[in-house]
Image 1: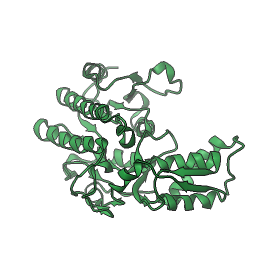
Image 2: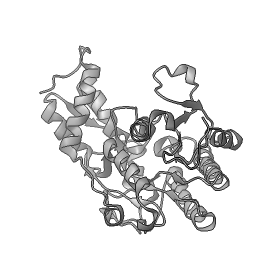
Image 3: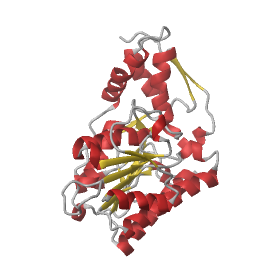
Image 4: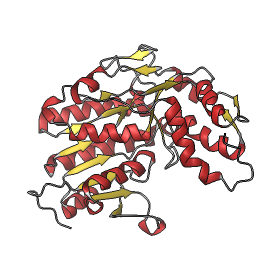
Amino acid sequence: MKHDKKQLSPVILVTGARGQIGTELVAALRNVYGREQVIATDLHDAAALPDLEGPYRQLNVLDKDELENLVATYGVTQIYHLAATLSAKGEEAPLKAWHLNMQSLLNILEAAKDHKLDKVFWPSSIAVFGPSTARKISPQNALLDPQTVYGISKEAGEQWCAYYREHYGVDVRSLRYPGLISYSAPAGGGTTDYAVAIFHEALQNGRYECYLSPNTALPMMYMDDAVRATLQLMNAPVEVLKERGAYNIGALSFTPAQLAVELKNHLPDFTISYNTDKRQSIANSWPAGVEDTEARRDWNWHPEYDLVTMTAHMLDHLTPVYKNNSNTAAVS
């Protein structure tokens, strides 16, 4: 498939397409632009993925030549770069996480520069914040003080994106994702993963042991809102985007205890216990919420899901998965 630069529909390459964000973002992009216009890539061999619907190529994003060959072969005009090692997993092998997160981004930015791509999307994270950030609500221009290698790589990545935008005219756009909650794919090793695991454990076993303390409030977002925000940002006219780094986006802020209460409204027999581990210190360094006035002002960002609607939607999709499990708790 060769791309005609004059045609209206973009040709989009997505890295990390089998991850938590990529699974739903690829589907959304194909729904908007057409299945053949979105090339999903990941480390997995296509032969091991029988459920593929649309173009898929195995790609090690650290291989710059392989990446650029795909860009040239397909006539790619946009890249959504999602491949990364997340916060908790990154602490297990910091140098490996740094290499993957930073070198892959630089490969993407170089490809965008050399092939004159229209746009690049790269996700930042609330992990860029740290102990020096306001604990309750972090403003857009808060002091960045990351305490994990993941957060450090995201702070550095924001600066690299700004550099390529300023020096080479690369239109790279970014969001500081909060913790993301999805039913479509397992979480990928982040500190906020409890908010996904709790649904599976509640439905399968009727109980959950949380690695964060009951009153640990963190910024969260349902995946439907995250995908919508991503597409909304990428479709915004470049002249309205005033923030040169990554935009804060807010939606939910809740604690494990608050989520457990909402779950019990649907699963009355559900119980939760707490046994904090090293992820607690990471969570303690992050704000409880983010202030996103700039995103609302510049490209009209507004979340659609609150804690009640998110919980109900997650259970609607996951309950059928466990309905044949004899240990599944009864949903009221």
